Image (cartoon, rainbow, N blue to C red; front, side, top):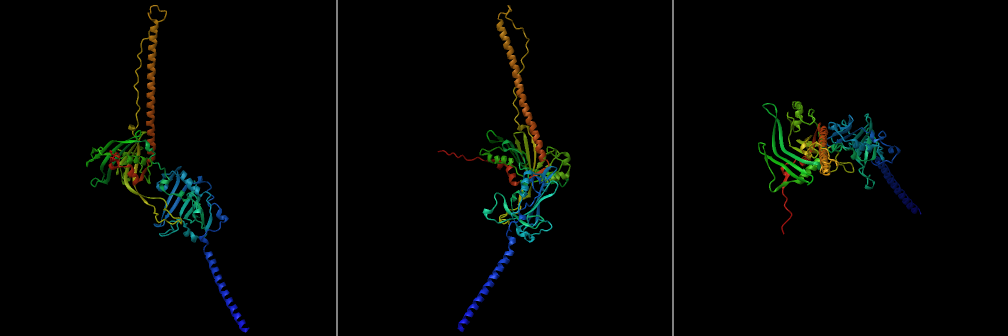
Amino acid sequence: MAEARDGSHDRHGGTASMRGRTLAFVGTGAALLVAGWLAQPRFAPATVRPEAERVLFPELSDAAKAASLEILSFDDELATLTPFKVAQAGGVWVLPAHENYPADAKDQLAAAATELVDLKAIAIESNSPGDHEIFGVIEPDAEKIKVGMTGVGRLVEIRDTAGNRLARLVIGKEAKRSATAAPEGGRTLRYVRKAGQDPVYLVEIDTTKFTTKFDDWIEKDLLKLSPWDVRRVVIDDSACTFGIDEASGRPSVSQERRGLYELSYDDKTAAWSAVRLEGFDKANKPKDAPLAADEELASGRLNDLRNALGDLKIVDVARKPAGLSGELRAETKFTEDREAVMSLAQRGFYPFASGDILSSNGETVVGMRDGVEYLLRFGNGTTVTGGDEPATDAAGQKSEDAQPDAEVNGRYLFVMARFNESLLEKPTLEPVPEAPAEESKAEKPTAGDTKATDAAAELAKADAAEATAQAAVEERRRVERENRRKQEEYDEKVKAAHKRVRELNGRFADWYYVVSDAEYAKIHLDRTGVVQRKQASDATPK
């Protein structure tokens, strides 16, 4: 019995010991779980609280209140800030970063402001400043950013007409969510922070509305022409270089002319025809270079040229010096202004005292059916940096194939409009009939005149003569009215063309434009672009 009691005691003691160890392990595991749980809440959305449901920017209750938008982006590789702003100046929307170039901003700004109107937080992700880098909402600040810094967001600021801040938001990384939980359309789940405050929120927002691409904010239709109204194209394929003569110190110009191609388009037959095809010898003297027996016009490329003119895209602008005339010709006082001349020459344009302006890379002249003629001069090459943020993946990180703001190879473009009367079809006026000769009016014979042998016949003859004379008068009046109508209609077309030329030149007056080399290649062809080998016939004898 004693041995049994002793054995029982050993078993109970062992069991108690094992239970103790088990409880210790469980306690340790629980403690670790609690510690892990305590360490994790800042990485997972907190339960939505009333303060997280409030509108982030109650001051911005109406998108119409927005009078300016500023976006500050950060390039973490170069540690540089890129500002973009659109605002009103003198009642006109402008882009200050592009020398106050006019912006087509009313609808675009309203769309951007609408994204922040009634913007509500879905959840509070963190209240700790130490988490700002994790969520990509560090405020871009020129005094604090450094090379290699990560987690810097994009700052969006909207102000009213008085300059008061209505919204100031730092947009960070995109949140990972399942496809079923993803918002519709262009909206995504993003981490954001009100600038100057610590809390990080999760919101639904369409960040594409905060674009900094230049062409998203301007009038895209530069020339305002319809391709179907193009009637004539003249391409001057030449190259010019400008320099300073060492002996005299005066600017010098050398030109190499390669070809001149004048082409006409008939909208009734939808066909191009060659009006003039010229080449040039080494002395720049023209020589005829007509189509060979096995050549034809490259209608496809010419149609592409015409269509490209109707959708001409610019990638940047630069302001011209003042002093050009209303017709964008170089006045004498302009050519005597060395700074103004150098401004043009640096971009590939050289003004002469005669008013003409020579360009370094040729010209394309486009004649329209309404009598308006566009002169497009192409200058020196340049590069333009793209303006929007690089692509990111769902986590807000740069995609492997994402590129930083790309540089676009472009070319300066000097545009002007002028009236060309030969483009208008002149009215065909009918010859005006001569007025009937006035004859002495004889008294009509009367039936009671016994001396008249055939009174009735004479009376009828007189009536017929009078009717013929009256008809001639009416015909003359009709022709005069019709000719006057045709002439007035033509005069109205001339008047409208002059008005349009003034309006276009008013728009072009202050600016050099920059087009991409791809656009330049479409609208300024050489002979290999204008002419092609005839296509072999598909028909084969059987």
